[in-house]
Amino acid sequence: MSSSSTLVTMKKMVQQLHLEASIDRVKVSQAAADLQQFCMTNATQDPLLTGMSSSTNPFRPQKVCSFL
Image (tube, rainbow, N blue to C red; front, side):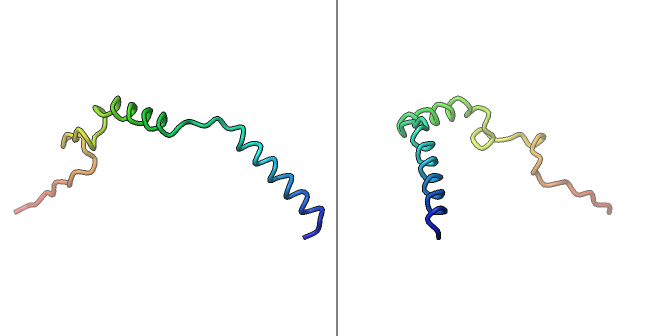
């Protein structure tokens, strides 16, 4: 690798590091609290928690017609 390409690579790396350093961070405890609040707020609309009526379930087994 030549010195000019190394210099370009290092400049790109410094730019990337400046970009990453300027990102606003959220504390893990705050993110966890926000996630918990979101889950509690939307729990009534979650079909995994509340179940789904058989008439609106798109994955219910299809009825088979049989003739005797």
